[in-house]
Length: 258
Length: 293
Image (cartoon, rainbow over all chains, first blue to last red; front, side, top):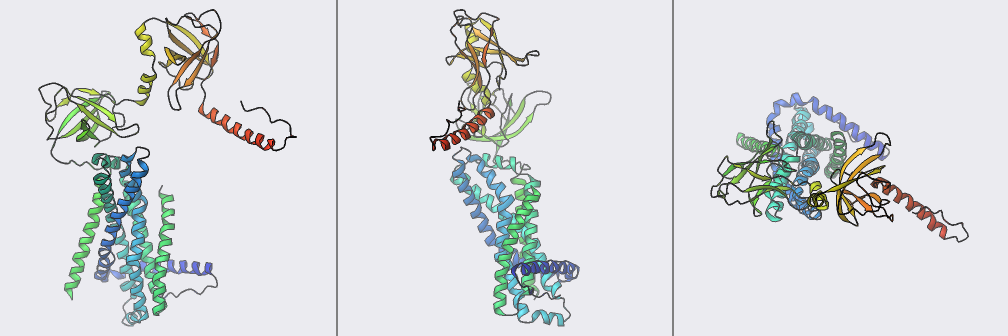
């Protein structure tokens, strides 16, 4: 119910204890899903906060990632006279790697930190204990809605990111560098597969990253020491742990899905 | 109290709709499911014997200017002919009926597109019409074959005589490959068959009759033109006073070099060379083994 920061004697046991506690916390979260259905409005409010409010940063970053990727590829591929393949390479690299990973990193920075800070401050100001006193389950009311919101928001944000990246690549490639419009699209559509790239790449990966990032954010918020310094550390740890988890998980998922 | 919650709900709903719209865009517009059609256009059929690497939505060009795109590529049922439907912008509706549609490649490794050259007919091709005159995609192998080819020479001058040559390995030598002497085509390879008894390759060379004074101790070798070029038979003249006659066999042959063998030799030589260099540091040592050539 109230997982405490582990007291290990070295870094390895501490990290292992953190991972173990985090896994137990995930089980608590999942068990609370049926109970959180009565707080569905809270879930929608969180979805608005972590999803809809993140749209600006996701769209702008997606646009620039697509643009810079196209610019780089064009200059490399022009050595081989293969510039017409650059649209295809932009699409594949964005769908398979950059889209899910960059979206998840941005999501951790934009939404994960505020989830941790919010819950941490709730704990520091005894709001969590007050909820328990009022017989309101804090896991079902605070933790699970945020976790579910992150889980739903990440794939949607990733789709928006990828669409903007393609748009940015098209903008630079076709409008600026003069790749033929039809060639750009025909090369892309000839190679991109719905199953391997869209479902396995965009949707599955971003779903996994969304689960990991929101789990870490909620867990760090719940286990933070109830001081202002503790909240600051917890917020930092959310970003660090999320980034490492995203990149490590990305490697594992890619190895499995390939 | 309910007002802000409703605005959350509306905003969240918009966000979800936007996310799914983006997903639909990715799934339909950037994958093979896509089949978009832009602007008003009319379709024209063209049948090609070979479309090479032509893809759907590849550009259609006149004088290098894009006027439309390839709408669909299907195989004619029961015939070895590709049916290509071209969607051409309605601005360009004055294409003569006898125009020639050809498949070109942009650059050496670039993408293929369809180029249309105007004919002289007064009639223009209409929506649903067919461009009868087409030129299939040029295969690189055929172009190289033509470029290095000697078949034309032999055919034009008429009259060849055949000589046999046995090789232990002909590599990728194919029928119709040129036979050259001093780099000049003098004939072509007529047949390449495996000898069932001697277990080697028996190559029949058709040589132009003008070259009837080739010494009968000349050597035949399978060479490659350039690094990735086609293979041909080179004849290196010998010193015998007697000339090759029709039906003779060339005894001295040199088989095709396999790239793998060459690389293997190179690597082996490289390592022995290193040893030799190391040995040169000590003059008292015995001379390095002669294995370089």
